[in-house]
Image (cartoon, rainbow, N blue to C red):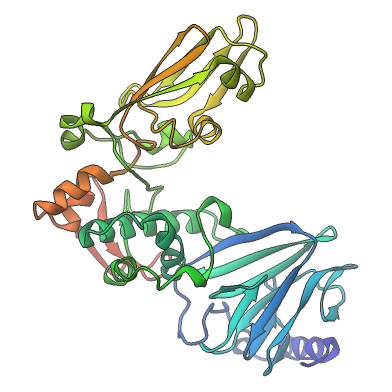
Length: 396
């Protein structure tokens, strides 16, 4: 590896060159001529350090200026951590508090604490601790996350529809603040790097068959999701996630509605358990906040008679357990020392209803028709990179 002085001289020499000497953007994979749509995932936040290993050739750049710092034709494995005003990875990099490690060829790979990642790795010294970000093309991101999330789905059309939904959401997350240091946390999206890919060939095939296909609403990718069983109607993304975003409205789901009572569930919790999750000593009343169009619950108000505490649905479900509080389509009653939830369906009720989509695929509906059922007024587009629209296709 060149030492720090060599890298600095190289950077200074580039400043005196003609403009083509400095690339306008650094591709995440040198095997590709142009950079595809990528997403930045925070894989370590305010960590004391990590074991960073690069197998094969690599270059190191400053992610802010995009100027080169150093490079190596040999791999390296060592602890990386904050060091003064810079970072140390076996060798010190003084006064360099951010670096971007780029594999120089497709055979090179990067591992953080033994987990392999595709794309590039960015390291930031943030007041004596480090954050690590993996920038990866969205196709590989989907292969990692969906391999964990969709193991219970087998129908090829449904998998392709879900791949498009997930890709649409990833494009939305990455493009809404393109210059952000990171777009999403790994632990919020089941992202586990490259190692979990290639384990479910049907999922990989669905991603490949729909490569670069996204839905757009009002000409832009949007916050998209899916739910296991909507129990008769889906909700608008804004109303349940409580975020001001532009997204299609919820829709009736006749198939799930017809079978609604087949998917009725009841869960009982002690009053003390509900009180504790709200930070209260007792409870006398629990009342849901409802989205008026779908009648799905986006939060509950818990009261002890004097004080009240509002808890959003996702926090409530996380604390009570998804296997117990199965959906946000429920009624609440208090009987004795128990709080009873009587509900229908499964999931948060937003986006594609998986129960209905499986039925539609079984009767021969196309992927486009499945998507149009749950995402009205949207278009399918082939979009390899952000802002690029190669073709438009209205849903059937």
